[in-house]
Length: 165
Ligand SMILES: CC(C)(COP(=O)(O)OP(=O)(O)OC[C@H]1O[C@@H](n2cnc3c(N)ncnc32)[C@H](O)[C@@H]1OP(=O)(O)O)[C@@H](O)C(=O)NCCC(=O)NCCS
Image (cartoon, rainbow, N blue to C red; front, side):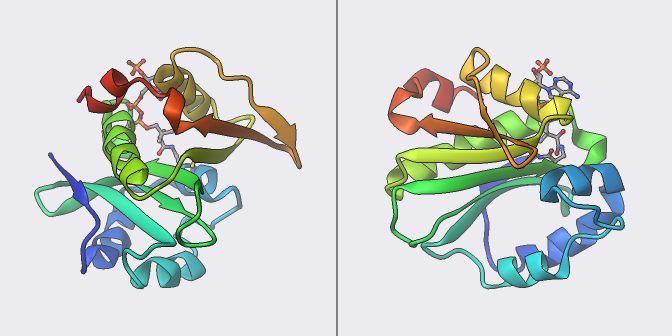
C-alpha cells in the first residue's frame, strides 16, 4: 500500500474506485443520497488538482485507489480547513483512514493550516469512532443543522500522533 500526495491523473483513479464504494460509504462522505455514484460536481472540483484551496493524500494498492483524505479552505492561504476522508469498503477498518489523515495533517501544518473542521452525521458511527481514536477521547462536537461539527486546533495535536504509521 502506497500513501502519497495527490498527483495528476488521480481523478481517473477516483472514478475507477467507485467499483469498490458502497452507496452507504458515498452517502456518509457527501452527507446526501448519492444514488451510489460520486457527485459529478465533486469530480469536477478535484479535476483541478492540488492548489492552495484544496489538496489530498491518497492510498494506492496495485493501481487501485483504496482511499483518500482531503482538505479544502477558502481563502486558499487561510488558517482554517475542512477535512474529509473516504476509505473504499474492502479496505475499511485496516487503519487506512488514520494513516491518510496523519500524513495529510503534517502537510496541512506545513501549508499554514492551524484549525481543522469536520462535519459528520450523528448516525455515522465509524467516523465518530475514528475521531475518538485520533483525538484520544471524545472531543465533544457541537450540533447544528442535523450534523455533528468537530473543530481541532492543530497546535494541540501531539507530534507523536502525527508521525505514528
Ligand atoms: C470513517 C472511515 C473513513 C473510517 O476509515 P477506516 O480506514 O475504516 O478507519 P481506521 O481503520 O483508520 O479506523 C481507526 C479507528 O476508527 C474507529 N472506527 C473505524 N471504523 C469503525 C467502525 N465501523 N465502528 C466503530 N469504530 C470505527 C476505530 O476506533 C478504529 O480503530 P480500531 O480499528 O483500532 O478499533 C470509513 O468508514 C469511511 O470511509 N466511511 C465513509 C465515508 C465517511 O464517513 N467519511 C467521514 C466523513 S468525511
